[in-house]
Length: 251
Image (spheres, rainbow, N blue to C red):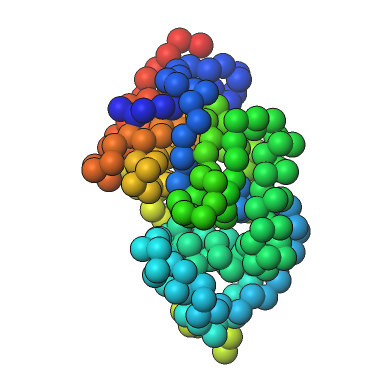
């Protein structure tokens, strides 16, 4: 099912299931949940940011998830959050880190400071998107810390709204092209009650998923890390099985 993971009943605070809950592992694009947290904490989502060719090239050169941003377009921080969280755009992460740091190193320092404030004692962020940069210490976390991050992020109404969308369109204006961003979290389409939150994949991390669902007044949050390195759908099936078991468990 997964190398490591955890399932928690947010309603009661009870841990329902865990496997290697304190194992320090790469978390791939789940990192972008913390990226979003830092941007949200700024309170300036209307800040206008110009898409640079460097941001476009960053996603292309790293064969990373992309929001398909076009150099020269001007988008708000709020729109770039959608580009970050739905299609998991590394181009959006690049722009947000530079705008809200200012500069990516200051931004990553804010990510780590937020992790410390939340009590994520076995987490380190090396960059803003979870990609394995050869010149930096790798980003890592644990299932238990990732659950803490997910719970904190879902307390933000803007974040909750974005990650619950199956997709988002913005019309063309004088400042930017039109865009349609589809959510990479297929659990939203496949599991009744799913409300987010973030996928992740690198060769080192395998396929990962941080997820949350609500049924009959009960809210469960869970994570699976390194579900497999070859089957793109295994993480969604693993999450669905955990959720089915968790909702059926005696209270």
